[in-house]
Each structure stands twice: as structure tokens, then as C-alpha cells.
Length: 136
Ligand code: SF4
Ligand code: SF4
Image (cartoon, rainbow, N blue to C red; front, side, top):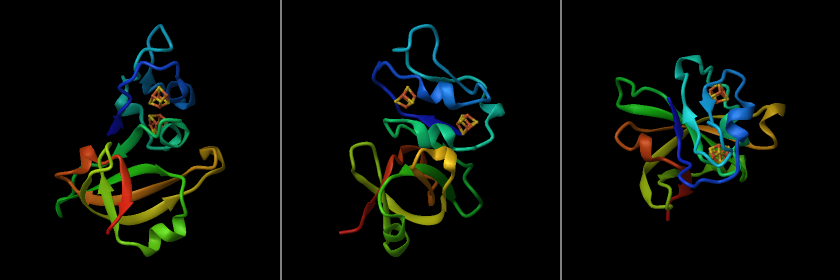
């Protein structure tokens, strides 16, 4: 599932442009908010996540039998530190939601110098996760 948390009407259409599957659409004016229109066409490539200048796009898996869900999010800080620390999932105001476990770091020449983190979080908080913080 693609989560887009882009509430402002800003002049940006990067997500729609980078998606070659036409999953994300911005209708008519560039200031319109992006819509997910063909989610079944999404190949989870992460290009929209990596290229969004507002870090406003996330990929979310289904919740597994263990109650955990995988979230893919952009990350521009030290990924080595991310491996060392106990991570905390935070919402779009930086409020802590619960623990997050780093699964893998995704890198690509097509990601515009941004890496993507795939983290495991409780399915009960997954749709609210917008970033990763540290404990303490
Ligand atoms: S993950 Fe890839 S295919 Fe899916 S919406 Fe983003 S750019 Fe398009
Ligand atoms: S690229 Fe990001 S900031 Fe720009 S319209 Fe899409 S979701 Fe919003």
C-alpha cells in the first residue's frame, strides 16, 4: 500500500513524474494533491519515496501473522547509526509511536542520494509512521 501524506497544495508533481507505472496522478493543476489511482500497478520500486522532496510518501505492507507490518521510508542520515540503535517509530509531528526494527537499507543510483529504510513496526501503528527517531 502507498501512503501519501501531502496535505498542502504545493507546486510539486515529482511523485507523479517519477512513477513510470502511472500509479500516482496529479490532475490538471500542479498544485493539486497527488492521488493513488492504480495501486495494483505498483511494483514497490521506491522511486516515489526516494524522490519526494517533502519525504511524504511511504510504502506499507500487509500486517503479518505476527502482527508486524513493514514500512519503507526515506532516510538521509547515517545509516550505520540506524543499524546500531534501538529505533523508535514517530508520527508526522515527531511523537513516539512505538519500537521499530530495521530490516534492510535500500540503495539505488536512481534514488537521488537518498536511501530507504525498511522497518518492522506493530500493525496497530503502521499507518501513522512518518519517520524514525531514537530512544531517550
Ligand atoms: S513505488 Fe514505484 S511503482 Fe509504486 S507508486 Fe512509487 S514509483 Fe510508482
Ligand atoms: S513529490 Fe511529495 S511533496 Fe511533491 S506532490 Fe508528491 S507527495 Fe507531495
